[in-house]
Length: 357
Image (cartoon, rainbow, N blue to C red; front, side):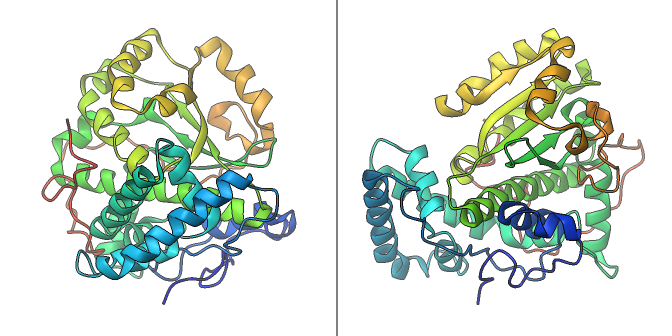
């Protein structure tokens, strides 16, 4: 059994009344980002059918073709992984299938291959379970999940920021504060950070899927990467950055429309020259690198001050923010339990889509 709709099976008691009643898109985002999931099932969105005019005739025909091909394959997928069928059935809404088609425009066969691979990866990686365990609003009554959740909130560096002036979601990654050197010293913590990044990507994907269903239009988010505080230590661990950059494109297609790299020192351009060839050209085209002097005006054009956290020059109350704290990793080894989600470790049992080059 899977969660039906944006809010069914999801607690909404963490969202404010204003967030839940402002408009359907904001309500959908509050249900995904501001409320802890109550189950570890994949998310179905409702309505699953795009309204008339939201997709062109050719696009709608391509979606129907892909859905029919997936339906024909589903009976064969049960033996590949027990969770693969549930993942596939949860991602058959029009706008989600359209994301795979947009990402693989060469043919429906290519889109089907991408969908198949992504669903198998999601099931093998335990994406829905990771999202339930590490969601920012998750509450655990002690035990391994509670320890891992607390560590993810302390040392991870990303999260939901709010909405833009266009009322689409945006997410923040505080790459400049990420203690990649500290993570690299502690393999178990690094594994947890990869799980936290998967949770972050799933939050993005659930947000745009839910928002699109709620407003009846193809939605993509904006990602703000804050490089303030970036050090050569971060750049020395570019292997970690390269590794996480490979997870999103094949498994969470068309989740973002723009990626803004803010407060970027000169070294970021050199780093981007190394990372960008690993990404699809469509992803490369979305990225804009902004210097420290231009970042503030770029953000103000896009996002109201009330939706920007203070560290980006806004006035958003700290309690509303869901961005992890990105604290420095201590020298002493952090004792972390094994994952309680059943997901495979990023290093000990990695998938083809999240291994280093």
